[in-house]
Length: 183
Image 1 (tube, rainbow, N blue to C red):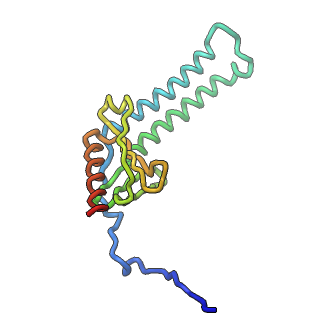
Image 2 (tube, rainbow, N blue to C red):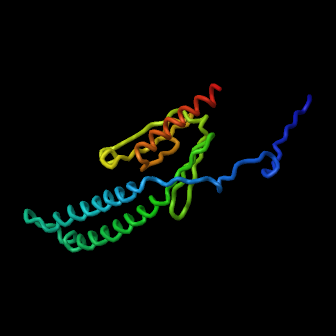
Image 3 (cartoon, rainbow, N blue to C red):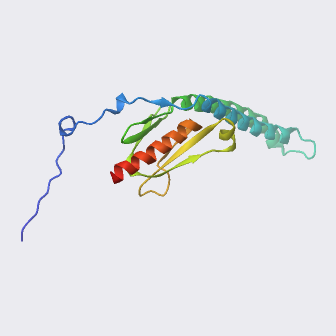
């Protein structure tokens, strides 16, 4: 009976193969229209929630239960405080989002406290979708959803791109993916 041994030795990254440094990427930020638009939507959503609570509190048609009548104003103040603070944090975080496109890969970075960078090789991109909602169409913005091979859901989404940039990125990726796959 012969025994077969295999190894899975550690490689010294610095000497194994020269790899491009992710720290030297030239990051492109999202459109300057994106963060203010999202801030406006978040503030309006928070104010709508507060307004609905206030209408329920001051409505004349029926009497609120006593506990609800006592605690609803505190709850609305809490929603206002937390909601508006979250709006500011999301606004700052949206300004930190960035993407980088190189010949062979696409990167997306996000996060305010905890930074996350997703890298997708162009040859592994199954397809790419350009997405626009009504507010994005109004502001001439789009989101790019990147789907990797073997996954049912999108790998990541780059929101808040100017429409012409999103179209260019999509075209570039699809063209370079085909060249890389078929020579």
